[in-house]
Image (cartoon, rainbow, N blue to C red):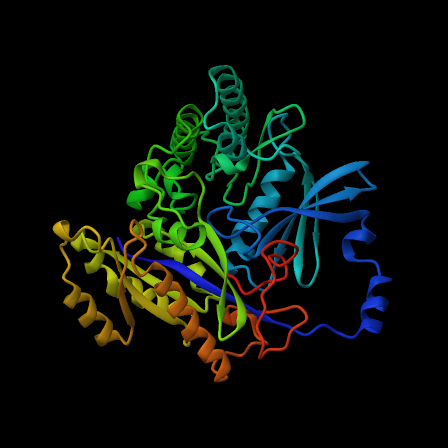
Length: 447
């Protein structure tokens, strides 16, 4: 199915206050310092629907805690850039759920702090990264470690289910490792409590959330499902990923994103686990621009989640597969969604991918051109495998966004437009900061 596979967010240059003001601000204690927390390095980040990383409205920072006598992790949620349903529904639910959970294989909740602009969730720090990091390092997990870690995962999720709590986003990225390399289940952003079955009737869920490759068939079909069974399905996917070092199912067609950001092509059947975000520096008219790109996939059942990515996006690539007629047929629906839920000035380019498979073509190039003309889109065919027109697709989209910035169409002082001003530069000389730091928590023109 087609998707606005890549939402493009611009970082552009910014102006810092004078040195005297900066020095005065350094003398003031932050909210976290007043609570005994001193921020350290960024250890990750995320966005809505997949813990997807130093670029959206969630940032994860390590901090030293006077209160707890050691290092902690702090999840920082920006109220400015987080979707409304996340702030009103999922975030309060997450805090309520984690407060009542205490298990050796669950990340321990310590404290929640709310300010006008942000919510801080303080939790146990797992210093050895995630299961995903271990799989990437070792290619796969040997039987001894796999048996130990899967048993720990089963124990933790069984503990949750016995207390009426479902996780609904179990995946390798959310299974962290402590100092002794024990599994710590984290990120209860889509969790729900009060689901313990006391009367013999199953309580079904109709919130279709989580990550595509780990989602149960019912979620992908968009039909009510038993969330406990869905967690068990996701655990099976995790076990497969440990044993084989790859996912059993296609997590979306990330090939364009990988080719543009990493200069590589990844076949669908051997998809790198967890790749959902990419960033790359480009030069336009002698000015440095950093593109932050999300691949949202094109699952029809996840359209409500995909809509949240349009918020704050400066541009989007609407991608269909020229070898699959049904992906072209759904373009109108996806385009309507993109325009309804995005800034009216968002640049949209129509991409027909897999142009290298001419013998399997089901959608003529002329059909793509006609659709683009009818809807006022820029059109191009690409091949992620051969790299044909991949650079041009992203860079031409970025150029159109840049032209709109120069013409004053985009208000660069409003980060809701998907544009963030970078440090030590004027708005007419863009230079973008790298991903990381507190950009995610401060709303760096994302999602």
